[in-house]
Image (cartoon, rainbow, N blue to C red; front, side):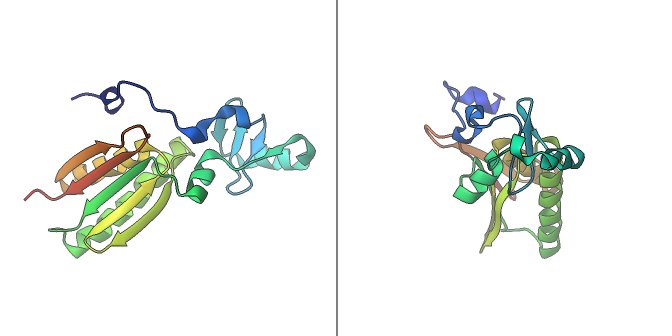
Length: 166
């Protein structure tokens, strides 16, 4: 099976990941994420140190908070509820939350933008394609079923649908 990024002839760019707009150090005023040494991370002790010298700190929303504010997902997971028992749905929702928290510890820019129930489908929008893939694969691994991946042309957006096998 081809890797997902090999399906494109060109590498699509995430417009929110332009490092040139962030000076070192930058603190996100929304989530307190820190940009330092060309990476984003959480560190409460370092944050407190930075806040003691606020005049030397830049304040700008991180890419994840900007995507959430602008409602700009890079991954969307559709979980079709047909054939899924109510207790399984509750288990899925807990698992989705746990997967998102685990990925956010690894990559603090990977977050859920929105997680909503739309009748016969749960729709999860994420700030990264990686988080969408991890959520979808965790659902498939635990509850089985089929995954369908689709990409938007000319835009960095991955859509994944999970549904029970017929």
